[in-house]
Length: 352
Image (cartoon, rainbow, N blue to C red):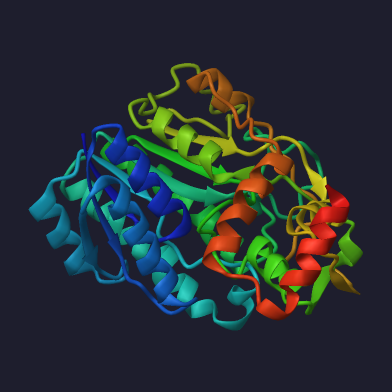
């Protein structure tokens, strides 16, 4: 199929483009290459993909530019849209909230409008586990209510789900929302804990561990995310004939709209996660223990049973294995400072 991937130079987007091209799809992407973090990492991801599968079409377009998005749909006529572009980050949403309105709300509206004006077989879009917010019942189920977000980022992701539902109901667009749980792996974003922690450990710098390291995260390796997306592409949702207005199912609808969790289903305390990073790096961390930050969720854990029933797949890569792969990439992309290399080698020898 001909597939548009938004955020194609992003962490999940680049991995997604690589997999789809390998699967034989005709892929074109868009990205705005903004400076939320170093754009060079985005260019390097694109180069990494092209080294393996050759050049692919990639337009430098901002989601908030409605006419440019419309023109892209007119020119390329995608059959499927995988919408991964967004302004990411919980903490940054406290500093620059308008960036989230422009990208996550106005930008998503532009995608929906283009899918309305140029009908597609399936719109798959990224949501987030952060929508569960103040919900303390774990594992998080797609049957749970998500009405109490704890950050603007989470609120925009919840809004995306509602916007997609309205367009699905009004215009028949098959829409699937994916609630990702703490995605990690090679080529990850530098504002996320794997790179932040690994760089601090490797450089002998103190790292901040919020909530004193006692909260849990359901880490999900990037390959499991991509496998889930690949299996869902040709499974557009159907209207649920048994959907009951008196007892509405939050995960489906009388419209062709569906929500899935994609998570590892094995939450880990951040203290234990840090210990695994130390093991793979062969260095001990200098830790500053701090209280929970505003906007952070205490614990996350996915119930991915609906995904398993729909696709026959659920995330399966254990954190220890995934972090090993991540650190192998990290050592190559962020070479260890020479001053710390002998210490790292000695600590690794002792651990082994």
